[in-house]
Length: 127
Image (cartoon, rainbow, N blue to C red):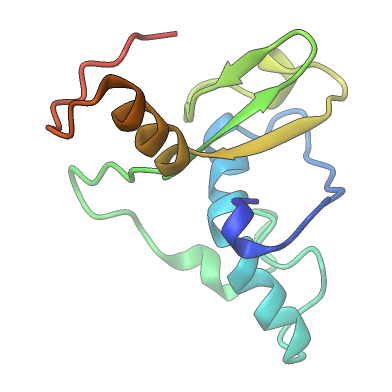
């Protein structure tokens, strides 16, 4: 969860055939899922993609590409997992893994301070 959410440590199991994009969507929507659960609107597994939730009926608008303001990574060895709707967690991460969520805006702010160049442009190195 992004640091701003104050969520701390979260333990969540995903199916091996869940995609990396689904992991990112879970992180993005975690606060909403918690709010819904606290209001009695569903259990912990609501929205898990198993067809038991009315919210699964929404379709993504054409040509829409969501921009996440965080990234998901493992620490040892350090690997950043980019959102990918075609790659499953089983293929990418394996049977289990401890992952962290890093806010991207913190890194961007740090990078601007170090460069001394407040101008945007976004020509960062790819990983």
